[in-house]
Length: 108
Image 1 (cartoon, rainbow, N blue to C red):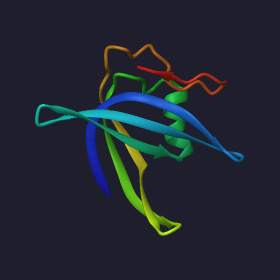
Image 2: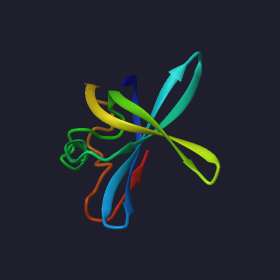
Image 3: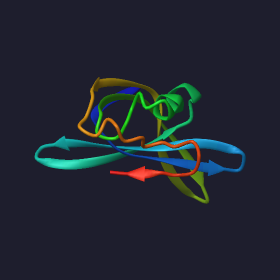
Image 4: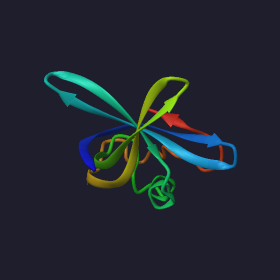
């Protein structure tokens, strides 16, 4: 398992067949440059943190994640899967609900 800290930039709801997941993007500064990391969120308990507004855009978090690769048509694709998220400190946009179970998705 790996870990990274950064700021929640966006959270988007993803529907695939009958399953719902989240796509989480965090931004992190590395050597004067800002990088983005995109994670898949599949655990119900973690998705609930966003719908309950425990975690929101702008919050600084530590994301613990696993890395998995799959081969498809002779090419390999790598995904990052969130195992756990820990709040480090609330961001300035802590009133923005980035995950609305109804239908809307928001981006910072």
